[in-house]
Every structure is written in structure tokens, then in C-alpha cells.
Image (cartoon, rainbow, N blue to C red; front, side, top):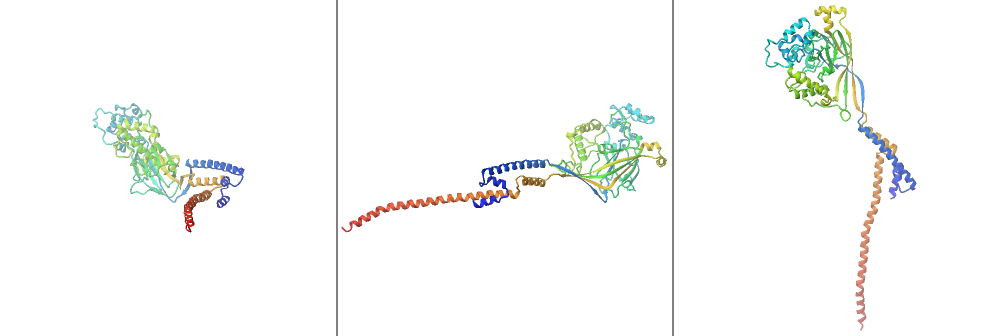
Length: 500
């Protein structure tokens, strides 16, 4: 007991020891007991607050600017706002696709609005084209909608008037074809097998892609779909994106108008998100077999593809897979209404989260009018076009890096397990003056107390059988003495009778 008392006097957890120690007045023990309870209550309150904060998985965002010697140039996707050229239509094309393109009524009669919008010569031509009285159509649509849009779409060889990359000439062969909701589009610096990506080692104008395009506005469809108005937009739709991301021009693209030179200064951003429970990003390969790299646009296209194939048994021209392409009739009756319904209910149907690592490009646009009075005469002679045609149809697009740097935006954990342990340890020291070693010392104190009580119990239990054995021996001795007493009396009697 002396050793235990000595350890209690030297313990560093004074409130607990003083409250439990038998030494001292009752008032002193009551004071330390109250102080210990209040301190433990405050410790549990603040510690639970820190645990709840940790379970909320808070995050913060770090933004850094990094410099590079060279950067991969992004993919630039360009689409003409007009999906099909009116003069390229054949009678068979108009018969099967006229209603889908908004040129014919459901009974294949020419829409009056279309005739009113066309000029004299074009109106006469279209009226003859829409006269099917002597036309013997095929039983069904020949070819696919992909082949139709490929043939009717604006060809880059006709649109591209000039092309330079970092001051070096380029041409239509440097672009690859891709189909989107705008029909036939073209990508510069796409990730193609056997071709290396183009890089740039300087920022500013003249160190990127510069192209001059003829949008061929005279070949635009007068209407698009079942609207009662003409198409308002004339120009091209452009999207700047990474090579790992498929184009989604109708939602993520920006417009470039004819009669202007548009400068697009871009900056690369590399974003890093955290997976659950800190964030909601998706890591790893996608579940779809259509795309090798996960992205939000890939997820959206995948979702739309599965929905259209499931409901219409066909796919639209921009959708991946091996299902048959929708015919113009299927486009009109099923695919486009189904896609519109999906867009309305997309919040519940297509849940596409950000990838944990992604690259995007910020853009700053500026523009100037073209042509100037001096260049107008030069362009008239060069392209054999009038100044009005040049103003209405020709545009210049200049895409370049603003500077040779990129921005990293990283989502990080704001409160980790080390911070939680540090906060709880600090509160333990503040409220109860304890640490891990102090807790171990308290357990050691309890262990010593239990050991000091155990030998006394064991000693008492071991001495009890010994006392019983001694008592039994004494009883046997008494019995033996009593049994020998008659024998002694008999011997004494015999000895007294022997002299006689």
C-alpha cells in the first residue's frame, strides 16, 4: 500500500488522483471531483465538435500559376451553323429528308414559307425539285443519314481560304472530320493514331492557329426544322477543348461571325477534384465501351446514345456504337422528340460528374471588322468575289495562348485526421492536463492498485487451509491422548496387583 500511495502522489493527472485519493479532507475531494467532471464535460463537448467537423469532410481550393517551356495546343473544333447545303440536294434527298430538314410538309408538298424566302431563280429551281409527280422514288431511303450529311455538309476544301499555324502554312489535310449536332464538323490538332500533337513555345498572336473561312451563306437552308422563322445565325461554331474530350459544340461552343476577325486568347487550366466523401468526382476508366477516357461530355454523349438506341432502335450521326443510323423519318418521328424529352428530364436521367483530373481552356474574345477599305479591293481580286460577299461570308479566326503558362486548380482536404488528433490532444491538455502518456499512467495506477489488493486476498485464502490443518492435528492429538489414558490405568492396576 505504501508503493501505491507513493505513485498517486507523483501522478501527473492531479484532478483524477486527488478526487480518488483517500488522503485529504472530504471538501477537498469534492472540489476536485467537481472540477474533474466539468473539465471532462468541456473536453467531450469540444472534441465532439471537432469530430463532427472532420466528418463533414471540408475542402479548400488552391490556385497556382505554373510556367512551361512548351504547351500542347488544344483541339479546335469548327462547325458551320448550316448543317446542309440547299443547292446540293437531289430530288431523292428532298423526297426522304425534306420534311426532316423543314423544307416540305408532311405530305411532301413544298412549304409556302420556304418559297417565300427563296429568291426568284432559287425559287423556280426548288419548285421543280419539289415536284414529285413524275418521280418514281425508291422503296426506302438509300444510304444512311451519316452519308447524307457528309455529302450535303459544307466541305472544308471549299470553306478554308487560308490557314497558318505558328506562321507555317497548313491546309484541310491538317483537319479531321467529326459529326456533331451541327452535322459535319472539322477538328484541328485532334488525337489521331500515328500523328503527334502540335505544340507551341510562345504566347500571343501569330503563335497559334489562324484560318480564313468562307461560310457560304448563299447555300444556307432557308429554314431549319418546323420553325416559322429563318435561321438567325450565320457563321461558324467553335469549341476549344482537350484531345481527351469529344466535342460538344452545341452547348460548349462559341460563335464567330462573318465580316470580323476574331481573336481568341486562351489559357490552359488543369483541375484536380477529390473523390467521395470529400468531393463528387469520378476516377478511373468509364463504364461505357464507347470512350476510353472519362469526361463530362463523353458521359453525356454516352447517356444520350443509350437512351436513343433504347427508345428508337437507332442512333444519331454523332453518337458512337454499332447500332444503325436513324433514317430521316426516324430522326423526325422518334430521335429528336426523344432527345428533347431527355434534355427536359436530364437532371434525373443523365448524372455526369466531373472527372478527378481534367483540362479546360479559358477564353477571352475580341474582334475587329474586316475587310478594311484597302484590303477589300485586294480580296476582291484574290477570291474573285464582291466586297459585299466578302463582308457577308468571310471571317478570320485566330486562336493562341495568352501566355506560356497554365493554371492549376486543386481541391484539397481542409481537415485531416492529423488535425483532428492535434485538436483533441490540445483540448485534453487544456481541460484535464492529460496526454497519451498521462492516460497510460492512469491505467498503470489502476493496475498497481489492483495488484496491491490481490496479495492480501490470496494470502488470507492460503492461510485459511493451514489453520484448518493445524486445528485438525490438535484434535487428533486430543483424541489420541484420551484413547491412551485407559491403557495407562490398566497397566497401573496390573502393577499394583503383582506383589500379591
